[in-house]
Length: 612
Image 1 (cartoon, one colour):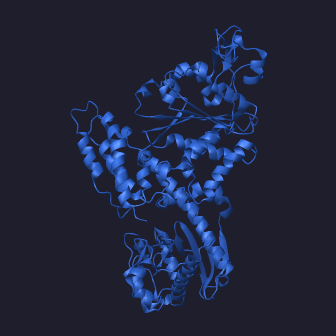
Image 2 (tube, one colour):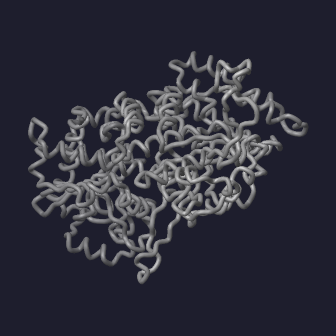
């Protein structure tokens, strides 16, 4: 639903900027580019003075053609993208293009050209001295509204996102963003030209808000949200930071996507599937994030109308309807519902876990008690030495997936590095290679397979395979002492994705300052502590020992500064100090736990850069 107050203010800003553009069009003879043409108006060398020298459109275009840089270096009339430049304020005042009440109130003026906290800036050619058709537009969070005009004034408005220019090295980031947007399913319905209407239809001089203006504003905002999310994710990827959307995409992309290899082999496909391992420091939210991602991917499959999936959709929909992040879904509830869904399975490796638990093997089974036994009252009490061949968790899971090839199945292995990998997987090493999905192997206990067992758990050839529709995801902590046992044969068959402490902030809190009012303080504290841990002062520590966001959740949720201080003290005593003492055990040359405690106890003010 459109926020009417924001829409009204958007209308006011649009009126001001339209008046500016119309004035420049009507008095174009007064304005010209600085000496040297458009090249003089780069970000480093723009000028604010208004020239009174005559220059026609034709002359301006000629200069643009001769200029090596062209007219594309549009500069904002705003300082730092938010505050009007002094010369622009003088221009607005001189020609009565903005009310004196706003112009005389510096604080109000500095906030005037914003909607929802986001600056709306006017770009004109190579600066407002150089008015150029198709180079004059409003910019709002990566999104543009183009002014279309002729000598009579503004005739139409068009909402759009710039197309990437070939060989344009000055706009590599923008080009990368636009190319990324082309792959975003939410952007498909908003491709350019996004929205274009005759200027009169926006009714800027009408008392009421016209449908045309509201539609423009809504389209503007829809594009802004999509573009900003992609820009943020793109920046995170550059910095190695994983948000939840990116993590879920990686899991979704790990599924097999048939790709044609050669044109002449139209029937032949190169089947590839990725097995993923998300690794990082403890407390970075790896396991829960994978659980949540699997839940959302299963729930998003509209072709699955089973009761278990409907129940999964219901709890996710309730979280969304409540206005909270999906991450606020109770983890225990989510896990319980997922465990009931046949398309998901969870195991946690440990030193006692082996091939018989995972694939198949002879395992104890209950046998009927003897009539004379003291336990004869309960015929299910195991007695004697009853053993039978049984399918392990993974074999049972693959059997379900094989019979339901139209849906993707997700198998999560928590603490994957804590088990004896070779002992657990056995000959499945071969099957884990992405190109061998659907290829069967003879397992260790094949001589014990009877028809009923084969029909239930094996493929049509009586062999075991990992079906195409199975996604295998593991999680592991980098500092676990058993990580060295994760042999190279296994490493080659998994794609390792690092979840660092910065990513844990995105995964755990998702920048939600409503649910986590002390989030900015927590971010500052985490940065200070983790930078100290990764520094050279503690030779036994490194970035693998970072403190993940899970340790700070109760602090982030504190409703007041006083409550935050209380939670901070408890978190240190009960979580952080014992953990660091274990990390620093035997560290005789480095700094002591007291030095890290001093870092912890520093005041956690919200930095100016973190304030919203």
